[in-house]
Image (cartoon, rainbow, N blue to C red; front, side, top):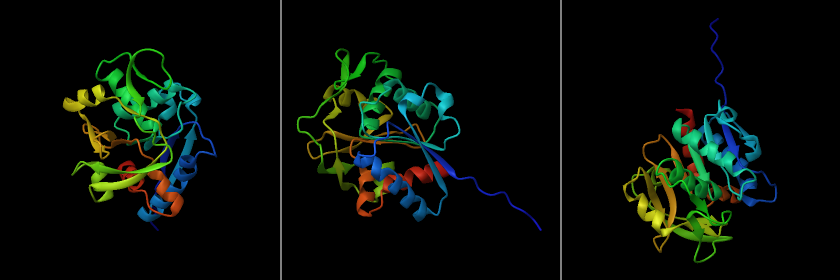
Length: 235
């Protein structure tokens, strides 16, 4: 009788400092498990504390990476190592909230040459590419307009969505303008035109959002971008 090798589970790295009291951290396993069930995929995921990320070697073998919310991260450099690894090695990547903010900084520093790009929450000097929001989005839900024919719009199947936030910081206006000719594209805006989602179009799947779409799982709803991440990891 012929035998066939068993398919190995997809391996997802959840990079961030796990805290059971953080709603997004409660939601992420639910969102992954739901997406895996819908797609009939076998998925394993590991929480990797940012202090565990010292080099690319700590991320080898993962089929996808998710840089999760709840920053400032205890080891910011671990977050930047994660981002660069995913970006340069075409590893499917999803970033939410703090993951989105740090994706902006890593790209500014390592691709655009803004060596002093910084986050206003944690840095006292430098070029602030992440700055305080005019209006806090802590525990707020807002409408987001999506650029048509992008990964995020295809995942949702529409160009207007409403999602929840838990943040006080977003993309600085001058940096948003500097992205105009970059392959890191703005693919989601709020009603005032502020940046809420980005995609790296030279990468198979590199999507980051300021909003925490994973929270949908807390109310039993699917998280379309999590399904899209797993599909990207499978290919």
